[in-house]
Length: 182
Image (tube, rainbow, N blue to C red; front, side, top):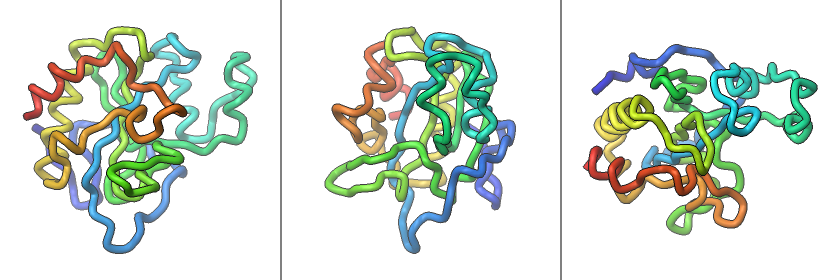
């Protein structure tokens, strides 16, 4: 398990502050964890393009698939690469822009009350042991600091934006992950 400092940064993470965040609504409790996947271009790992996207520095001319990303301002709290390295873009007490239009348990705007973790991957590429190890350690840490994040309140992006999002996809081993953090 890791620690979270007074500024809401994870001790185990490399800090790479993103401008793509804002304040959470007053009195909002963090009680949802959303698991995502991302790779840029899709299926290409270790490119540095995810960090560039989250920091508004992606050269959209690098790949044809990036054309739709031009002007997009998104982020996540954490990114876990294929080797298990963790990068934090937004402090946990701030609202990262990861979920978009979303609903959980009848509550809209999941960014208001959630933490978003991006795994480097695709819906169909198996995630690595290092990613699961770090995701479990981070999840246990978050559950200690934010007790509202119960096992029932850990979801995939696909669950809060059905029909719009599919991640983390069928390659994600929910059973093993949930058993490890129960």
